[in-house]
Amino acid sequence: MTERLSLIVLDAVHRIRTFDFKREDGQGVTEYGIVLAFVAIALAAVLVVLKDDISAFIDKVGADLGNLPANV
Image (cartoon, rainbow, N blue to C red):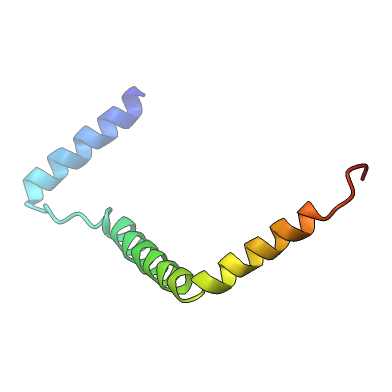
C-alpha cells in the first residue's frame, strides 16, 4: 500500500516539476461511455420498432403455456 502511495506522490511531484498536467487516463472510459450510450439508444429504437411483435410473441408463449396439461 505504501509503495503504491509513494508512486502516486512521485508521479504528482514529477508532473508539477515538468508542468505536465495532461492526463489521458480517463479517455478510454469516456470512449466506452459513448459506445454504451450508442448501444442503449440503438436497443431502445429496436424495442420501439418491434414492440408489437414482441408483445404478440409473449402472448403466444403465455397461451401455449396455459394449454399444457397440469401433470407435466
